[in-house]
Length: 65
Picture (cartoon, rainbow, N blue to C red):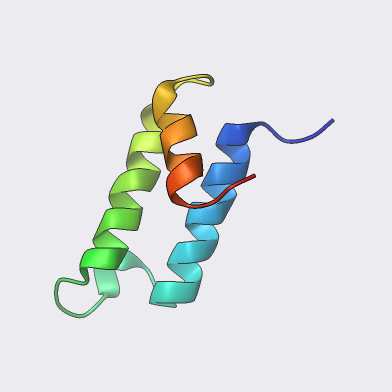
């Protein structure tokens, strides 16, 4: 069975952090707004329940099929 949308979005956000940051957000230099935004979106996703509208919104924002 295919992964849920929430799982796919989470994987995409974690991949984005790894590609953009190459290290944990706490170790990033300065205020990298992109890393902060992705981290905030990941936190919002973690708090959302399956089927929450934020999951669909993030999927659209990060182009998750």
